[in-house]
Amino acid sequence: MLDGFLALYVFMLAAFTGYEIIARVPVILHTPLMSGSNFVHGIVLVGAMIALGHAQTPLEIGIGFAGVLLGAGNAAGGYVVTERMLEMFKSSRPGGEAR
Amino acid sequence: MAWLPGAIKACYFLAALLFILGLKRMSSPRTARGGIVWAGVGMALAVAATFALPGLAHRGPMLAAVLLGTAVAWWSGRRVAMTAMPQMVALYNGMGGGAAAAIGGAELVGYVGTAITLLDGGRFTADGQAPGTTQLALAVLGALIGAVSFSGSLVAFAKLQGWLDRRFVFRGQRALNLLVFALAVAAGVALASGLLAPGLIAGFFALALLFGLMMTLPIGGADMPVVISLYNAFTGLAVAFEGFVLGNEAMIIAGTVVGAAGTLLTQLMAKAMNRSLGNVLFGSFGGAGGGT
Image (cartoon, rainbow over all chains, first blue to last red; front, side, top):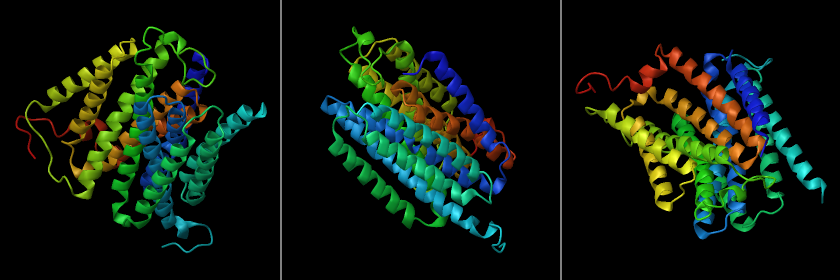
């Protein structure tokens, strides 16, 4: 566990980072960015794996297993959907023709 | 293998860095497509590092669950129509919220019966230090937010999918929702203060899930994107809180970044619709009888 105040500093700085990333985003990217951030919190998979790895009773194993299943779904689904959304921005690359 | 914990921590650090850089790239049309790849590399790195984590049991079921969840979500995300994307985001976001709630649940269940020796526990902390009330409270908070996001996102998915096309509005709904929320918080406070009874844990989760359900049911389909964005921010926060409990820096940073970015994004989306967030969330309650 991180030291209490160090954790608070990390929390504060990460919150500002998230705010700054979004601050000047164009409207057309709202939905892809929502989907992209949906993918990023798929990191919950890692936590669910740790929870399952430390489980002892059958109930804990069941809950942990469900958590890993859901977390993997979040990460994989989030990636696929975001990638498919962003594919539509192919043409706005420099050199590409604008649609 | 004394270098292993350090290498795993380095992977988590790299993953957090790649998430932030990836999101940054996703916020500009020119670099957006590469952004998701950067974030994807970070995710693969973090998951691979977690498999290498020493002292984890049940690796077989773990691998099976990872593969199964990935395959099903990958397949469903591939074949769904482009117009159905928003509800898929809601569905996957709900899964993330459910996973965060499951982490909190597994932890709380693991502490049942050891309530007296609560301060010697610490099975979930990375370096085996004793979990205090702060950690327990963060686990409860993450579980509460995650469970609300889980059931709320599933309702949002059902609404956009056309499975639930009417709004459920009735007199006194706001008061009832508030009551359910207050009961969930009260159960959570009791849990965080060390009163870890299995019945109370089950009741706490039931109330939290019920609140997510009741909060989302009265909101109309047209407002769902804003609501999904809000639940996305919720899940981010839940992940960050469970990250504090597990002592996992990648979860803390990724979850907090998404929590903050998602909150701002929710406001921007509401503003783009010329609405305030409060109006989206509570607008349907209003007058007596509630016009549908």
